[in-house]
Image (cartoon, rainbow, N blue to C red; front, side, top):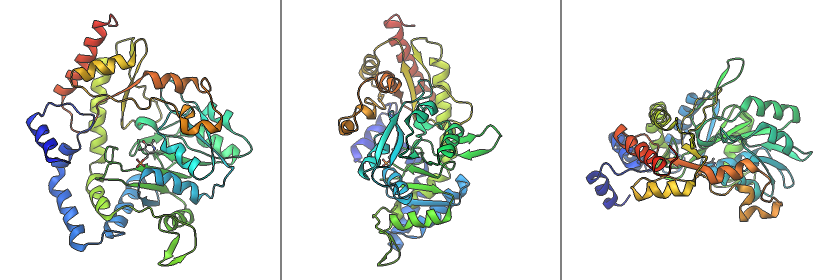
Length: 392
Ligand SMILES: *Cc1c(COP(=O)(O)O)cnc(C)c1O
């Protein structure tokens, strides 16, 4: 991070940001600096001891047998599909309203992405739409736990079982969330399907200081195979049993993540405090909707995303920006309408919920270092916008 940015933040502590990674670092500075120094002392930058230690600590946290670290969350999805030996022509069901990475790896491996719609209130993959997307060529479903809340995994797993499909849970935004089945069984996000994948991109809920990712796998044979694929298809150096890739988590990143994993639950509860504040102060306006919380999943609020029901979302975004308040649109174009995916033959109108959400959603600043004063400025400014436009 350039020094000038640090100075600006220190001089102007009230500057509102979408995320504040520098303040978060300062809070853990001593431990992070020591962890980084230790890696440099040993100079074991690739597959150093911190990588396995982090993997087993995260496996314990998640209550799953194996965590296979890799280079980023996109690779984690690719490795999952390679490990499951999905072949060109196989169809993989994926929500249209998500980050592009989910569909990108499907296309890259020559598989066919089959887009489905999401629920208008939860933004999560719609099980009924999943059923409609299934054909004789379907091999896998990729539910995305968007914004930090688990998809309807009970329904998805039942569909998968009935049709003999793999389930790859994209947990990049929901690490740490708890899912509760109707019989009371609780599982961590990403440990319910065949494989769970996640990302340690800096702004994710458990972020490192660069790129990083991992897979959560219960099955030992599958975990070993994917571990090999991530490391050039070798178990013994220079003996390549499988065609693999180079996708490893750097030792430095693993060392940083070991420190931050201890804070993850704390980070989740800080994000929930922010969400509660927003709910309380924005929940009573018909013109906008606060995010709906589903009954069977906790929410880790990777994003706090409102829906602008009866006004132009971009006007609110600009109003906020003019008053120094950032906001983001995740995501402005559903995947079935992206240029890169036109060859799959989708058109406007195919997934009306995803299309409508892409014009209505707005994510507000949410992170682990916010103070009530800052949140009040944000909600007061939104109220001012509503009042000014006769929407309050
Ligand atoms: C961030 C993200 C990814 C990709 O992770 P990277 O580490 O950036 O490759 C995949 N899916 C979703 C839903 C994400 O939010």
